[in-house]
Length: 293
Image (tube, rainbow, N blue to C red; front, side, top):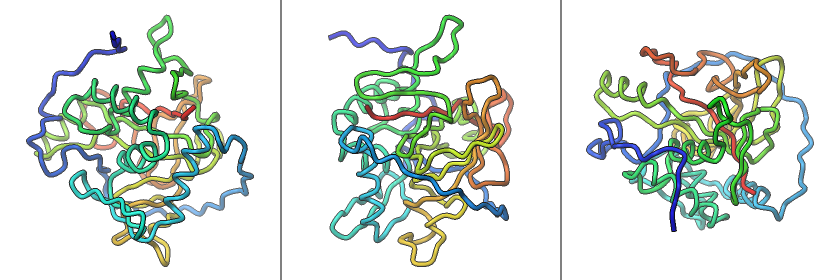
């Protein structure tokens, strides 16, 4: 069988060298401490419960089951993974939650296809990380005649799209850090850099002007705005791990409504696209959205 990919395998660089044993094979947020004084009251949203037996409904139900069963959680790297359903203990990173704890458990064929192609792009990774998710989904999108990403694409398992106004609860949002930014960060800090962030939309987007506010389910080292990890009675051991909170995304104004930057909470610094010269915050290659089908 011949496998054809939209881009070639990457030659491993120092930024993905497994000699960085402490954090390698894991995705973690590179964030300063943020204090958000924004006052935000979300509108009431009526959830669409149709399609519960479809892959998207199965994915969403598995994520909800983890939230319902959650007793103890913490953000941890690859070697510290724990999924103990009996005790309600879930410990991992962002791509581990979405890939291992949700997709692999509920939609195994979807996971196998993702894992196969993600590994073809990043051969050192034993499981899909953020850049593996992103490159797999980006390959599904393909390019238009001008070399730009198509707005929508799909294969047997996934529908991938760019527009924030098409997001539904249960869609996957993937952020990839630019490789040149990662190399420069690594050289400055003398440590490996995360490949990005993987999260689940846990509401419909609230779009005002060129910004979209979305409730997010993820496994992270810190919470978002109005986050369950920071609430009384939280399952989090230290403010990290699995939780739900609000993020804000900046959207393109070229008619595509594509997210291209984000606030980790609702205010503070924007994390934007890589500009070609080192800046701590402008680090992104891009943001994609995917839905299991």
